[in-house]
Length: 421
Image (cartoon, one colour):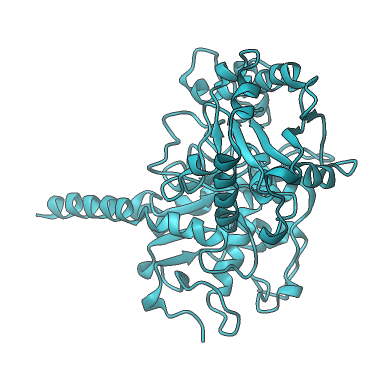
């Protein structure tokens, strides 16, 4: 049997948006008047593009999970179920694959004057603002996934009252983004998850510190970076504007480069340039699995997929990112399996290595054991599993926002009824 709506933690109403907003972006074409692919057979589901596209694929997994909630023969967590009427819903889900649209359709082609990504956002705003569901609470009970830091740039202000699922707040102005309203979701890690039984212990990890990634970042001031990001939408933000409040993280790239100069000649440190090309993922997979500590240094944004690659390899993350927000931190204590270092301390000569070399085997082993326990919460999979998948953790995070949504609704009802008296 399918999930019992009466037992669900969260009832979600999902708009039947045309395929051009979701699976159509994957090249899927259904039969006439078919909005959704048949999700009952996992092998026939349209695949999401590989490479770096995958790290921001949350919208894909959440949409599949909702579609599956009405299928009777595939097991899945029943905490969340898709309901057929918005009046039954706790949350209204907007199935727009915004990260994929950003990655694949932001550039102009041929004689286009406006990108496909911009057109889709404009159409989405027009659709939502015309819906009674949106007007009811001004969109406060709507859920929109915008995990890629540049996704929804044209629409995020107009739709900012909704609950956004983000990677971080690095490119959001302070007056829009906050943890009371928005939700932080983990990247989909790129390396393979190491089985607990095959995870190397302290003695089996000869590398003390590991980092592989881009080192020489874009040499851009924060104000110029913001203009650069929005140039497709003809927006120019003066350097004095509060819009730049969240963009101080773009200086993180300079920190990464300075840390490289401090560590590059140390014999038990692997700090090198790498990317997804040239077998980069396989190299990172092997290197992290042989390392005690893996660096997660702010780059162009406060967060990166590298943190979740480290967790998948049970390599204790060392987070050097003062502005980072972490997924599920209301239920997970990251200090149990991560080391946090202020950027100013990381740039002091000898500080970082002395800190890490001073961590004893027992303390490291405790963190390693905890990593093997929490890794399940960062896995995106289909079908999802109870408490074993990021999808389920995201839905639980949304459910914890129900009280604030109800509060908004009750306040609006109170004001509306008082006007009728």
